[in-house]
Length: 261
Image (cartoon, rainbow, N blue to C red; front, side):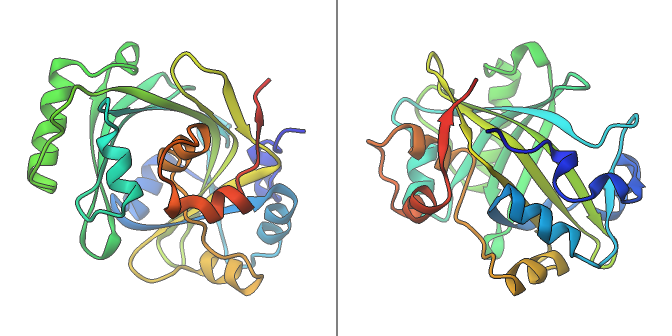
């Protein structure tokens, strides 16, 4: 049984819409604190239905659920992964992100800022280059990492993991924050089979340093943040030989995978 489509997770189709331009103006949050939750689909539906604070749903051309595709890059020795696995302060993540419905891609470099805030820098990228780093892309990666973490990978960067999912984005006007709901989350290593998250969604809140109203609603119903990264936790799930102490609890309790259809 696959996860419910994003639009079916709660009564999101009944909520008022928000356009992309307004959402970006009111809650761009390029520097933010992300809190992630792996929630059984049925429970997520119940909690969203009982969340009384006014929410709006990103809507574009009548659609409220959008397909995403991300390709993550690392060295042969998995420098980026190991920095995350060992909780290093100067860790980073390199990926392309493609908005499948609009065929728009970006190259993104994510680093850790002050107080565990995520800082994301990105540039437009050609969709046909999404699974490789061009010379221009590599220059941007090096420049961004030199400025943010004062070092660059010494090995060649190659694709190591691809993720695919459908995302619904929520805007919470009261706090000026946003949240996302990802369904049908799928992981695939190059030249390997795909695996999908079974009967659960990844709900992520994106706010400033303090928790937002949706976080407090989840906590009040016993749902606590999960230590999960689509990149690092996905790599650990698909490669049991890697060190994964930081994500063992999530892997044991929340991340049930099954072969993708």
